[in-house]
Length: 377
Ligand code: CO8
View 1 (cartoon, helix red, strand yellow):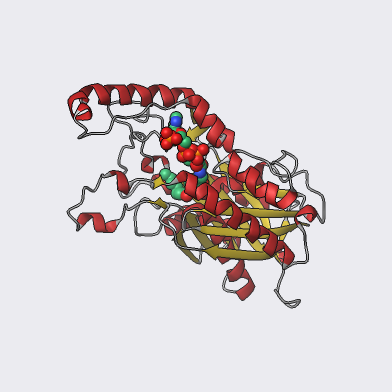
View 2 (cartoon, helix red, strand yellow):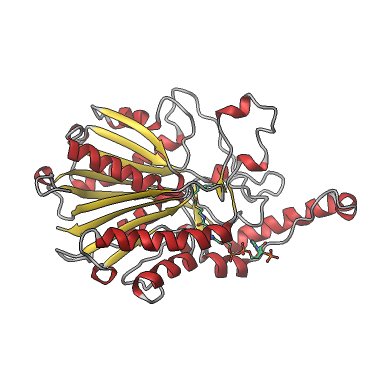
């Protein structure tokens, strides 16, 4: 950014937390009952090697390997039913608000209130998340309509880094002058894409919705705002986190409900490959502003795995994460795709003082890493 560039600020944030919780214990009990039923129904094929036996899940493993204890879900219905193993959503009519627009609006209203903005102050809506529940019309345009916002809206997908990359696009629009106040929302309704029959991934995700208001410094009236000093993005192709769900399913002869149409990953590879990339990315981003990791008062990191964040912070600060510098919300929320770092920001920024530096950083599928360096105003 040059000296003549306008100052862009985050002036409000909001989080909608679903009212329903599922604990590790509940998930493991239901998965194990499903696996035992599967194994007994397929005993002959398992014995002859035609079918793989379903291994059992363990609460101890989940908490130790991921740091997750609970997750919030839009609906509990169906998830723990061993004859269903997926959430049950009644299909809404075309003239009803879609589920994703509904949760986007909840978080958006909170962010707008925090920033002191009315619909008429906002002229762009970005819905950035891991999935949209339909291709078109864009969820962002539905949200724009529901909130009565004039201007434009668009959706963008980038899995784990959708939220940060969405903030980057908001920042760029404000710098360029193509928008004067942007509502960036992350309605992460991800439980419909979880394979609850897969021991390795059934415990990872939860639903949530987050939102932020970005605007130019001159229009900001919020009592709690952050200047965006810089944004930095990196992508590097990898198949280690993937979902093949998409519009082509109708035209191929593959099973449209096959396992590969759901979230799947090589978790260990992701862990080992992405953590160092994220640490280097953050260090280089800070260095571009003549800052060091020790100058940062708060890291609001992607919330996928406690051990991963420990590894990133160890590379930056030489120690494991501590609540005071790297708040973790993972144990409560689970992995909420791109929204994790935004929840961490929303719940853990009020105590920062004028001039304090903070870093929001996401990392994961793509691979992708997205960061913003902030200074409290
Ligand atoms: N219970 C008991 N044992 C288990 C379980 C379980 N539930 N799951 C796996 N095991 C077993 C494994 O099978 C393995 O057994 P073995 O040694 O016999 O082969 C053993 O435990 C060890 O397995 P791992 O090496 O895989 O275990 P890890 O310590 O690596 O932990 C994790 C697994 C927790 C998955 C970990 O690797 C991890 O979190 N990695 C990071 C992954 C990550 O960050 N991914 C990003 C996902 S978020 C994202 O990209 C957004 C996508 C869009 C959202 C999608 C929404 C649906």
